[in-house]
Image (tube, rainbow, N blue to C red; front, side, top):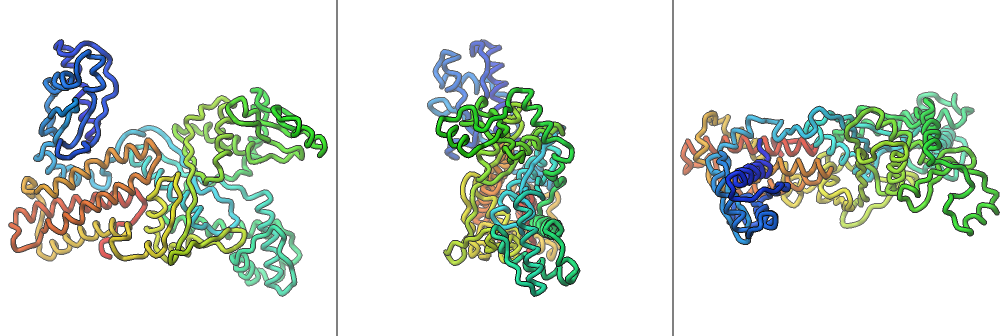
Length: 569
């Protein structure tokens, strides 16, 4: 399928070159030509302000420049007419016959509709979710899962070979507390009076794991220490996380354990590389510390930490990489991990992170720069919070406190398609208010129902066609009317939307476009009937062919969002 703004821009560029060669325009370098859908449909389908951009270079009025361009415009099958509007816009109208026959072009592409070659021959990696296995996935963490998976689907749709990665740590203080909490719950399940650790996890899920463990091993673990319980909890919880993600339609190709960076020595090699480049130094406080900070460090008897000289790369202050105790902070292994990514040869890397990672990812990018990597190859999507409502009331929770709403419970209540759509439909940099009541509503107020019902309606037409033994092959598409053409105009914008969504890593654009397309479809469906006594047979066959293409369009959009395309509802 053609990306029409690009095709129209190519025509304009050709026309300018021909006009220059003919002497109707003076020589100048042609700037990028912008073409977009016309703001006013009465003036055309697409418009370009290029004549106004060139007026200074051509030393003529915008209208004169536009006339010279239009005079030399090459013919194209998709162009019906080219018109000039003050103060110098060049407006294009699509050829109605060409537009009607895009029905066949849509059907020819099938489920690969608007597949492009932007990323052909390139490798992309998307890292997302990356939750440590301390508890079941909840709806807040799920937003990153839906965003990451949707970005991966879009990158695949434009030709990238995509690898999905999950980065986790099964060591450290959090995991120790998990092990100690499960040990306490296990002993409680055996009837012992065992208090929970002060910083432990109060979630009911650890009671469930403990009870299952007692059923499996009896009292044989009562003298084991926390590491054994930590390992068992990790295996169980990771199983939950993977199963929840698969149920949501999310898969990962690689599960990367932070510990492997220590096992291979990558963490310490990264530190030495930063020392060699002059970006690491030892001191009790950072070099830019004021006198008050220095006095406090001296009074506390602070030893030398290892600092990353990130302030030389635009940071407000230097960051600790290794504490005086010798324990690395998050900064050092995170830089080592991303250096590992770069060394694996990806052309594009995308991280999908929660709002609490805003400062950390910038430090990592500076670390990569200090190591000589090009940080522009790493794109970071920071997503904001998810608030859950039921009956107009906000539901609160946290993993540690144990009152979190697990993803599985939400999927049980509203279904996987609603979870995906509601977490995708807003820009990542805005909060999401997830209304559980709306997500289960079987009416047009629910955008999930509204979009999927468009596919259902198309599928229903073909069940009726099968019953009546009506075939649409070879239908005369010239019999399609203006409502169908308006829908086809909308569909032809899909290429623009996908291109923009990939360039900006903004999958919510697909959700918005799907909603717009459904809003155009349903009124048309009510008026453009196939099976009606007043509809001639040849018109009915043309409309049936059209609805076959419409069904494919909705199936493609739903697939890009990771959602199902139901036949009935």
